[in-house]
Amino acid sequence: MKTDETLNQQLENARQRLHDLYDQYGFGHSSVLEQSMLLDELINQHNRIFQPSLCKNNFPSE
Image (cartoon, rainbow, N blue to C red):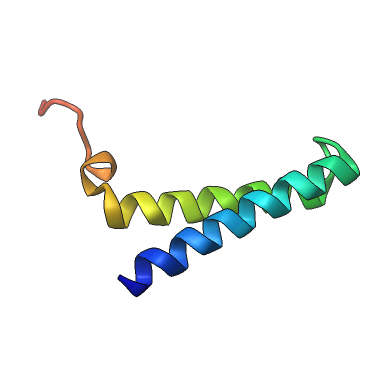
């Protein structure tokens, strides 16, 4: 599936960029934090598509 391959490649690229930025600037730099948030969003997107049960409200009914 094309979407799966594209999203997986985006995730891998974002992880590598985060690692590179961390090596260059350290943890607290704004570029590192921004890249971390971008990676988080890609992970959330992946989970919404491929693991929808994780995104449902799993709290018991009141």
